Image (cartoon, rainbow, N blue to C red; front, side, top):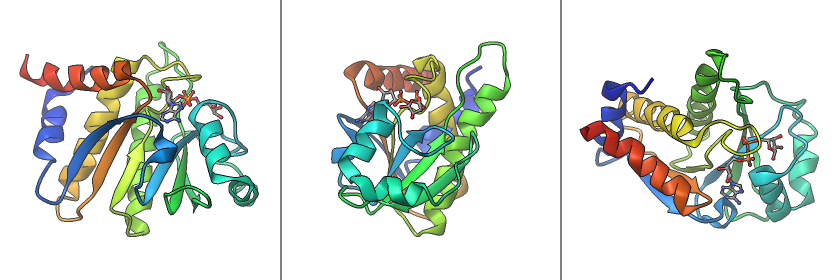
Length: 188
Ligand code: APR
């Protein structure tokens, strides 16, 4: 269920230091300090954005991922970016969508919050997220967008002096429109 108060923070979160941007395109092309990978628990690569990031970063990324011992759903781990423009990749594992499992929303929210906390530990100030779990893991885009925006908005309003530019990377216009629809629903 969309929490309007939390979502309002999405707009208020754009304080002079904190901004949320949207980009339609390939996350591997973004010139940001860190891109987030929608990985699986093995952290050993896959399809979708995971495959794209590993292809663009090169084999050293997989070599470093092998040393991490996997990652639990909802948690995040960090590596170098290697051949990417991004200096870092934060790997997080989204939930496989299950309409009957209320834990899904909590785990998806945790992907965004743990990635942002990890980025702060590394003094990262520009970070791009794909629409985690909305591909292979089947999370309905509009529901996922609401979770993503409220999680990012909450974190930014709780860290308003940190100065974080968050880019929501959309692999399609459709995903971009979905984010905008969720934000517009604030005014409904
Ligand atoms: N840039 C930005 N976004 C992308 C890119 C890209 N190059 N490629 C795919 N996406 C988008 C998809 O369109 C979708 O909106 O990333 C979102 C997440 O989709 P998936 O990559 O399928 O990730 P997810 O749904 O979280 O499933 C993760 O898929 O690839 C495997 O190893 C991965 O097992 C894991 C599972």
